[in-house]
Length: 464
Image (cartoon, rainbow, N blue to C red; front, side, top):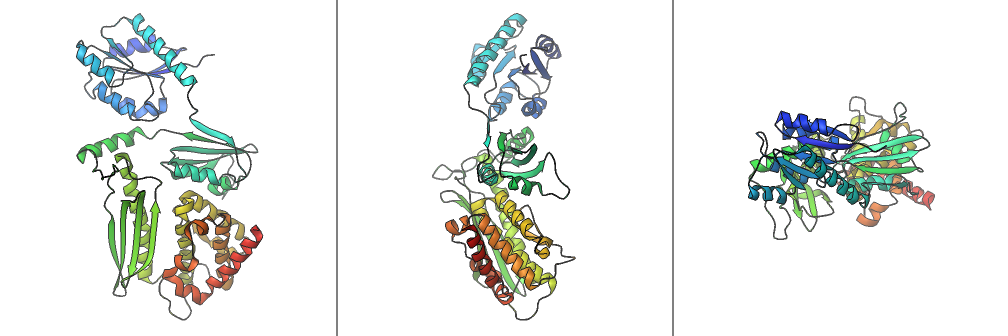
């Protein structure tokens, strides 16, 4: 049985809407009619039409403007489009066709003639689609499991869903612009980490479903662009100029800690944050995209990435200022300070890894190693990996940090690097002391570095 063709009719004339809804009826057609083009834009991606029939002169939005918005969507730009209008000027009709419409029918129209045009355009669209590339990727999982798929979705800035099926169970992760929104599954166990369960799937099949961005977001972006006066400034290389950076100062015992974040195309879009104390840079964090900032549409994401990185390093500076993760004084430290020391150590390792592994993969690997170690070292299980990769603990009930805790956290860091197949060390020359320089004194005093070296050697031996 043939699938009904989905047709969207946009016309502020109620008589035309009723006529076309009657003519384009089931079972051959599934027709949705709108009086306001703005209402249609809100629903178009959900409907995924096979054809759009639209008036030109409407009160709320001109049909040609409506067509321009539709054509800007990757998911809708190839949908056939027919103008139906009372315009008689040949020049205006030609302009409407040149704007991207597939045909133009003048009102009043003969219904039989319009139906013939609709059938012809739909047949042509079917022929084009028969040779089109598939809109989703699918196949069997590789021996590496779901890990490279998560990194691919993040790097590709996917808006859609990664689905993995194995043994009758389905696991999935939703992405928006490459950021993980949520994860789940068809049979979640109580207390299960959905992302971890996805990562633990080592055999089965996968598919990646790409979805359109929300039409509301598109309209909001256009409104902001119009309010700011149009296109962004361009650099000499044709790339969009990077948004301005941020600077903040936190006081620590009368001494300022400076946090400075800047972004530039060099040649890829790179965000650099420096944390300086006493005139000396104690941390430098740098993350890059895989391309320059080339489109105005990328500016909101660029600003969000600048803010995210700045705020994360600002939190570090604030805790240093409060003494939570601070100086290298000699003597016993209280449980909360010791727990913060361990949490920040793993957080710094995760931060260094994200530039090579991606945020989603980093979080998933941290959680995977933690689950493996927690049964043997319950103190490790008292820490939590947040969605941004930070390792945190319950401040109201900090874990009692013993030598076993330190050994466990060192094993967690070493196990994480082993799971990542030492990619961070090979590509970034990760040095544990360099990454944790700001708390190096205290880590030395509690014996973390020696515990890490022992755990790291053991992890390498086990992998070999």
